[in-house]
View 1: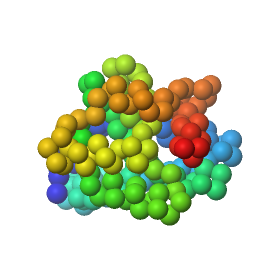
View 2: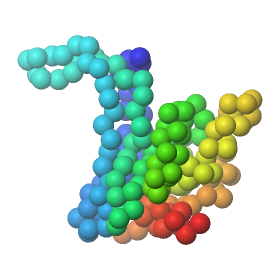
View 3: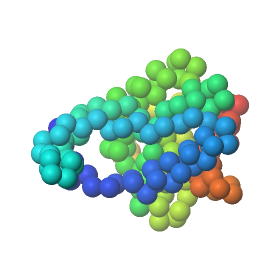
View 4: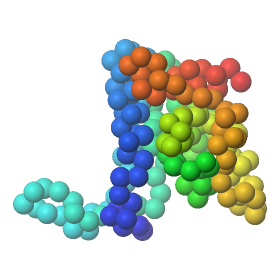
Length: 175
């Protein structure tokens, strides 16, 4: 188990933008997508304030977001990197497996990646992600360069939708 303190708020800015977008999608009747809570095991609780002061992340969760877009089951994981590549260590075998199983049940699964220094967002479907992940396990490249994501689906802001990923889902479905 990993201590919650060491992880900090990694990726919280990206997730907040996605959460705002998801609220807008819900209000507009376009989608119902929710953040999947990260399972934790509390260790220390400050009863006077009613807060957990120390916790451990449970080893396995699924993906960050799950829901339905006009009858289509959707799941995705949000990843953020400051560099020019996404470290494959940020991806986990159980997440890859979950996304594959999700697709086998007629769902859409992808990772949504923010290259924060460039303020660019991309969606990469599991079918494209899995071979890169598997190659890394066999001694291949340990990160996915931004240039690979540039060949994927670019996600833009559109009006009130801060990270308008619904067109990416449509593009995945058309493939």
